Every structure is written in C-alpha cells, then in structure tokens.
Length: 122
Image (cartoon, rainbow, N blue to C red; front, side, top):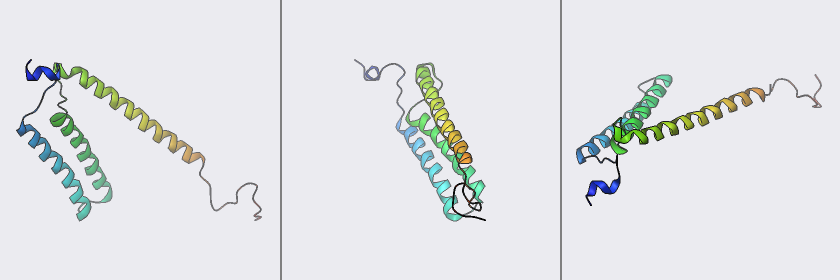
C-alpha cells in the first residue's frame, strides 16, 4: 500500500516550504495587529478594523496552508462541510447577539426615575 493512499482520497499534504510560508504569514498576521495596539499608531476604530481584517486573513491562511482546503475536486466535500459549519456558527452567534441586544433594550432601567412600586415619593 502506498503512503499517500493511507490518508484517503482528497487528502493532500503540503511541503516544508508551504508549511513555513503559512507559519510566516500566521506570525506576521499576529505581530502586525499586536504592534499596532501596543504602539497606538492608529485610532480606536481603525485599529479594530485592522485586527478584524488580519484575523480573517489569518483564518484563510490556516485553512489553505495547514488544513489544505481549496477549490480542488478532491476537497469539494471538505469545503462543503466547512461552509455548512461556517453558516451554523454565523447563525448561532448572530442570533445570540440579536437576542441579547433586544433583551438588553427591553430591560433597561432609567436610574433617574423611581421604579414602580418603590417607596420613593417625588
């Protein structure tokens, strides 16, 4: 049995060069936002945008260089499973944030006004 067959169809393994490239990109995408926060080079909103952009690119780097997910025909089922997982995560996180936002708006108490049923008379 050949070594490549032991991992099943669609399994691909990168070379040392591709792993080092992925590692270098991952380190750079971690160090750059960290450096921006520590030096304070950007304003608050711009820093948040850079952090989120670096995080998204870093996820793509990990998927491509370490998990070997790409658009090839051998990876089609893996890509579909990943996209379904991503959809479920977006629905769960988005739905949770939506519910918390709506409940937070409905339970806000105005601290300047006495609560109904309290003993404070104005």
